[in-house]
Length: 99
Image (cartoon, rainbow, N blue to C red):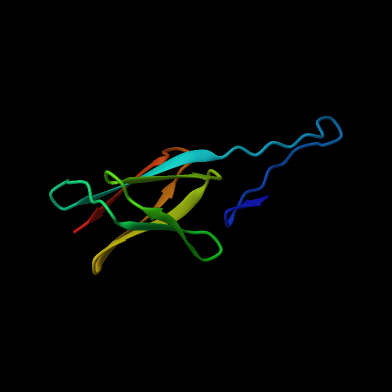
């Protein structure tokens, strides 16, 4: 299955259970500066079949429903950026620090 550029696979015997369910994870991306202060207005993206913009942070955060797997996230603010790979199936809060 593909959702929002992220693909996920599931093995299931559809002869015994024909309904295949894929769950998303509400993912929160938090963006802070080197002094651990929230950054408002940072543009946050993730990589799924190309870079996709989630939106700009409000109170240092932005959220998005995504399929659970390892995803690369990026935040840009002014001329600086931070990037991180994270498995959101085990931790759905992504913390990025722009220095």
